[in-house]
Length: 392
Length: 167
Image 1 (cartoon, rainbow over the protein chains, first blue to last red):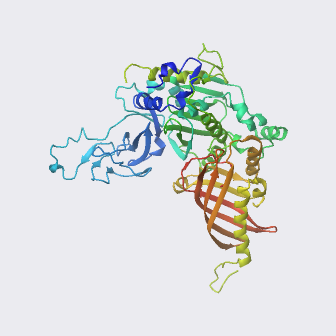
Image 2: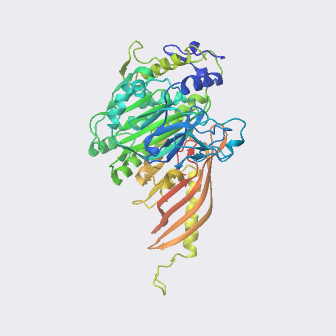
Image 3: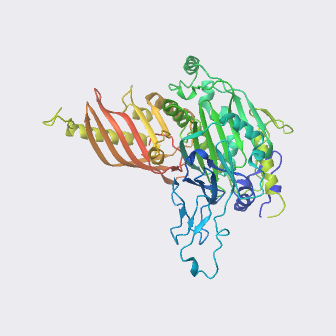
């Protein structure tokens, strides 16, 4: 590889070629997206038996399907005969998958069921070995993780303290999908993950929130395996106080509905899930973001706005609207982040002397005040360990 | 107004039809000019609403849009564009075609059309921001026909450019 990651990542700096190098990107696909746990979606996308949804693990197209017994499976969306894509639609419901090319049929768990004219093959088709390439699946509190590495540690062990926080948010409740957004940003996937864990920019980029005075102090904490959280205490702000803040601020915001919260206490938090997930719990809004790299300089974001079984229609409508106008791709916060990430990538070029600095906060500590870059440094610590591990 | 079968008839005139078509054209022109506040004035001020949503979400019965604004939100958004947002498209260009107007009685009408919106970025590259369909409700007011409830449904679930203005 032209650029060795060992030489590109230090404790507080990252060589910017890590965001543009095709060679680094291809190693990431092998070492991170093929060997570890990857977020591939949410259970709420496949609520019923026969439901399926198509996704990606790195650059490998996969199907997430729920079988008739209710179990969720993840397998390669590529016929084991000649490689044709099996599920041509983004989502649906079926009893199995039939390749349009030669009609090889596969079950909802990826097993090969039948082969037309099988007697005419020169050797007997071993259905077990010609079943679809299956991933190990870890469904955790409604999130679907998968790995092509059969020896990967159990998902709960991999998630560790991150898992405890996900469990604290979901609390074993059945999630429902309020809706999905997809958007593409011309930036490296790691830049968007960094943005999700970067609280330093919040008061400076999201100026309307600063003008409104709704920002609070909080914490930035790194956990094992590259995971982390940025969080602030959740306090429901009375509507009258919000109106007063708006009237006094330089941004006289008229529609304050997105700041309303039925939830009082606990945290507003952004969980960073290594390598490719973010979970945002903000007031009444809950969404999960799945990052799908599309080459070194482009990332596709799948965002799932989630609710819980038992929500009234009024709650769903209100939370959907709040999420749309706050975190959505044209949201008051979401739009700023797209702009910033685009600007970061646009200035990238091949320059062996340029590095990005990630030195905010005590570099000897695992966590501290909100603006510290603990979780970003922690991401690159886990990243380096995987990218520099022995073997190819 | 009822006809001999006691059914509500289309009560709009050709003049109303032309005015509604002009309303659509004016909206497109103002958005292309990035004159957000003048665009907002095309809405009925107390009840006006705009929603931008993907066809996929709409067909799934999801309420999740990309914009979901009453008139006050639109004014907030115009302030965001003026004061706080950057790297927005340099130029926008709306193409609106196939306009159909159906009067529904009580001084209201439904207007549908197809749209394509192109955006030129800061590098001078042009791309398609979105294509889709409008399905709006308009209402006759003292000041003329105004938007009451606008729905813009875009075909491309995957957005590849930032969205700052209504489409």
